[in-house]
Length: 414
Image 1 (cartoon, rainbow, N blue to C red):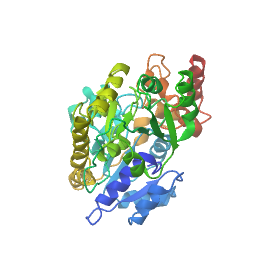
Image 2: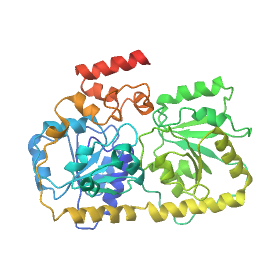
Image 3: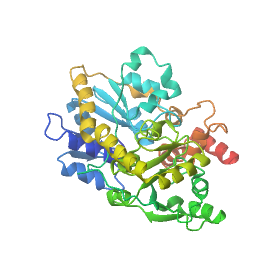
Image 4: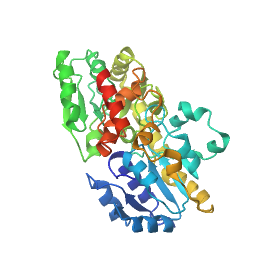
């Protein structure tokens, strides 16, 4: 995998912890030096070995000696470069996919064919256009193992029955993830005390502050910055305002599960990834427009008894369906089914080619028009500096002529 940061780091450290004391042991091959060492240090403390940018001989030994090679998949340029420029030994390949594939980036169908099992992290991925008419042989390779887990609590949180609630959001502020009218939605709430605390990197902080000021709502949001203690931050909330872009790439939605595990009631958009987790009226509220969002806020403030019941339902669902134990049982079943199969040679280059442009295009929703003005997910992905965006690929391959042509076309249209 490229790195052990963010959501994938939490997922894999949880997976390793759940397998402690079993007959399976994990080692990690990282393609990049980590920017943040929190999760790599955690897996090392758990007894795992982590190899960062190892030489070719070490890579060959690691793969040859592995009973199962588990590829953590998202369309990172370093992953394509590694797979398509190395002559890798035979392996039993399981792919754990960390993007939904519904919008850009899509899941390459050819990668499914190369795998023993290709595991989504949410049922929502089956709704992707290119999964609906998948060959029957390839459908047999598919499965779901959620990469998200909640926090384990000794008891369900007790909410006080007051009307003044604490609201918050935690996560990416990038326009490709957060709803483009996030501030507009918040500004429609007429309650004078309404304010949303925001935890996340500050890169898009000024943009959101400007939007608040333009609407005359200077005190609508309060930035808390990045936190290494999400439990304390999320536990301070009553309501998790998780309004995401309709074309976002997310799938397991770790932070949503974490908030819900603490009994924090979520308000989410009716996007596929979110509605796979939140059941409207029982484990949160699902909205499709600004009017419904305002109604959801007012309902929560005016119905404290129902709110308390919903909070309990929220905690209970995550404890039952998104625990490390559930992750372990699901992943263990695929390990056990794979281990008896023969190792096979996989020629990734023959599938994806050796040109960085082809690697990028393999995960684009509209391959004929990668900078299409009609594809919101492509335009939203343009805002990303990483996450497999065009900017991300150009940072790795700045001299690729065709990638630069797409960049120029997009700049001219923006």
